[in-house]
Image 1 (cartoon, rainbow, N blue to C red):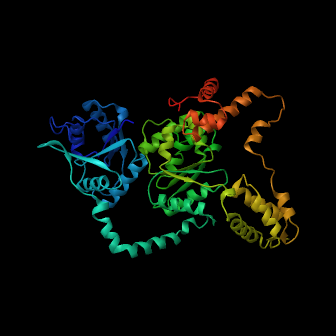
Image 2 (spheres, rainbow, N blue to C red):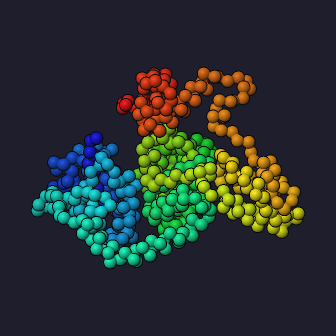
Image 3 (cartoon, rainbow, N blue to C red):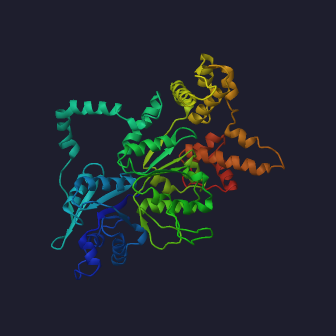
Length: 510
């Protein structure tokens, strides 16, 4: 695997002034480093100056150094003070995490010269701890030089700190386990859910995008609300958008806004959900249903923290955290060309995988007790209402059901049974009557209603595409492994099927 080299730096005052011709032939720290012997695959620049000024600098930098525009990325960072160490640390860490760093195959270099001394100090701390990186600096007197010194926070300082503070750390850690009021609405007893809550609490503290995966009805929006409430954005807007309910032709307008007259029916300006949620959190439910052109725009928003409403030439800066969710198999969608892989990596900085209710040992009883309390409270004071209990036999039926609709289906089943039951106790018969017939995904595919007729060949080909895509994801894009999962004798046979069905084939075939 080829190692890609990234240069990461703030754009400093001198960089801007050199690009604007205020320092004669001097090109500034960043350009000096790019004109050196070391060549970089990506130049990742942060600015706390006027964004348009820094964009002009990047254009000058590309022309002056010969680096192509697609290899130079610019990100706006709004700092209340360029010497606030804590704020600089938080903002830089958030941006690097959003870029999926650190990760294998990428070698980081931090440039110490541009920016304030506080910014340089944070680069040193991050390079020696969370984001291992080389350090460079430039000066008029000595040109470009590497910065190298021995400093290992983990081995030099942490052991001694732990020896001195072990009891205190343990006490704080124990307290943290019990203090999570923002997640109290997530009723659970199972360790699977507890693990995801623990992950979500840690993600809440970091300004990174989060992708919540799980079947319909597993509580994805509930987790998103809790993450927002536990973050520094609590009290700011939380806007939930069901992407699957937006008509494809209106998706760009709904999310990014539009100007009056941008298209037929645009009778007034519209901000769009990203601007409405600025300062807070935007929850994109069923993000996998977005059309591809909207996915491209969403990727740009995540990269630049700015949106361009339809019909407007200039962009608008935003400060919106994204939490996305889907019940879809995004791996299969990427293979099928329905979801962009680069967008997936941008969204999946933090990942939660919510287990289906059938895998949550002990949670059905806890949820039934909770929901029954809510139902009784809601019915109190209404004519002919009765306080409802539930029989042991009824609980047994609930605990044995597969719950394809998960927690949402459990609640509505219990609500129907409570309404339909004529006595104070919900019986097994009441539950059986309230349960909806279970239709599996396979049933829906292979047992369509004939109606005016069906195209059987097309139906079978669609099923084959879906199963092959699932097998390729499960086998990590290895055709030999996928062939075994699908019952083929060898990977060549699978390759022939994929070619016939128009599926992309990986170069790796073993």
